[in-house]
Image 1 (tube, rainbow, N blue to C red):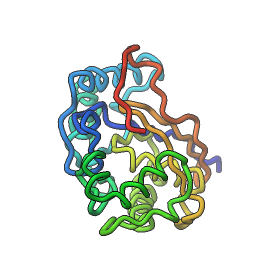
Image 2 (cartoon, one colour):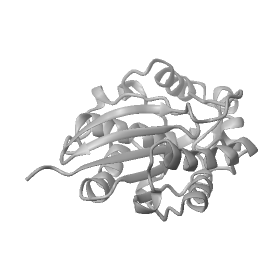
Image 3 (cartoon, one colour):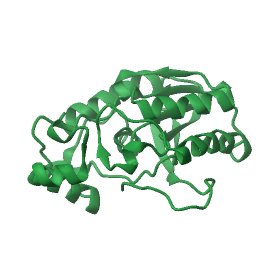
Length: 227
C-alpha cells in the first residue's frame, strides 16, 4: 500500500513586542502593528499562493501570547480551527527566560555568551548549558512526543504556529526522522523570522524539508529579526 503523502507547515508567530525588545522566552507579549498585518498576510498566502484551504488542515498552536494572537488572526481570515498544545510551548531558558538580551549580557554574561555563540554560528548545542534551563534533550523529546502522536498519524495536512524553538525542534526532527532519539551532536540551529513559513513533506516515516524561513509574500519593509 502506498504511503500517505502530506505536508507539515510551521509558521513562526508574527512580529511581537517581544521581538522589538529583544526578549528571549518568557510568557510572551502582544503583536506589533506590523505583526498584526503580517499574520493576516500569512493566511492570505496559504489561500492565494499554496491553494490551501486551512479549514481542511489539522491546526495546532503553542500557548504563548504572541502565538495565540497570530493563530487567532489566521483563524479569523481563513476559518482554520486551532488546537492549543502544551507540548508546543517554547523551551524554558532558565535564568535567561523572559530577560532581554541587554539585561542578560549585563547580569548573566556567561550564560548569554553561550546562547549567542550557538545562535550565531549554527553549531552544536553540546557546549550550551544555561543554569536552570530545560535540557535540549527533554525539549526535543517533548516535541517528538507531539510529532509522533499528532503529526505522524494524522491523515490531513498540518499547520503548527509556534515560537522559533519549536520550529528548530520540528525541522531537526523531520530532517533526522521522528523515530530517531535525540542526538546532541547533530541538533542544529535554524533561522526563522517572524511570520515566516516552513514546509516539510511527509511520506509515512520518511520526510524531507522543502524550505524554511520563507517570507517573500510579506510586504517589503524594514523588519525586526532576532536571528
